[in-house]
Image 1 (cartoon, rainbow, N blue to C red):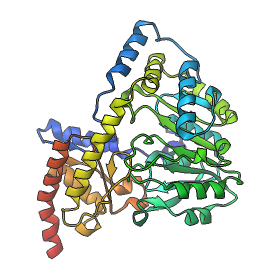
Image 2 (image 1 turned 60 degrees about the horizontal axis):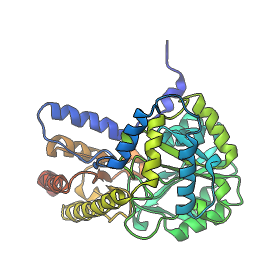
Image 3 (image 1 turned 30 degrees about the horizontal axis):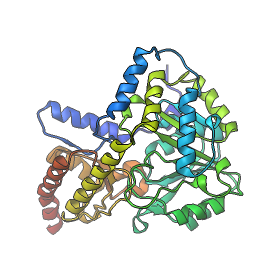
Length: 393
């Protein structure tokens, strides 16, 4: 027996592959500082954990509605309406186990073989993986360091064709921490609103923003019925293992997503959904404290990396990643990432894992303690002697 050919079209998420390598080194006794995984190192807020435990005690352990519990969908609709300045109701909400199913289901529901999807480059690798799996063509839009890792709206417009059916946006952005400025989002809306194109707006980091206010393209004139908002609980509430995400979209698309959901997952666990209600409606001080601490770590790692020869690191405006340019080291970003893991004990990701435009960059997650981040910078500095010597030869 052989696997179906389409399986060969699927990519992977390299963070998990590097994590496996790092764990293997740890079993050999090597000290590793983990800056590869995009996972908050903070505990899930206590009130959320207690809500989950209470839900278990109350018997929320059975099948539930495929689209999600009505109470959670109502809470999500209220939250999205309030924070995005739009009007949606629970019929527009689909609750799923994590954020990735919304990517998967939206792409499956919207793209035919031969269609085109514009995808950020560098960008979260699952976007490209799923578009290719569906038989559609990936059209990369380069995110430019000179623009704070945002896109050029004019360049995106030049890539639109009659086959363009989907544009994927991610702000704040993984892997760079960049954002798309509000004026650019407004211009994108002007370009897209009269075209037969949907927008998948990945807003999973919307609450982890350090400067200014978050802007969603769904809030722009004419875009509510053309946008799928992807959000969830993993990053904001440090609930990665709870597997709880959602999409907000036009009802005609939500009906299709429900069909895909019932054919794959049946439903999302009820007790995690009850915890999700508490996360949205309960105290938010834990989120504020987490973001404040991320800001401290961001400032420390940017300052530290910019003192290392060959590194050039911008200050990210959101998420919890830095994406330094390492071309000045004189070695490839892949070789550098491997060197940092094996010689410095610092786990990180080669930028090319996020697309061709990521070559020459490294992604570090600063979802680790300030002490470990400081240690990691010093380890990198010590290993940098090697490439400095090579450059002189």
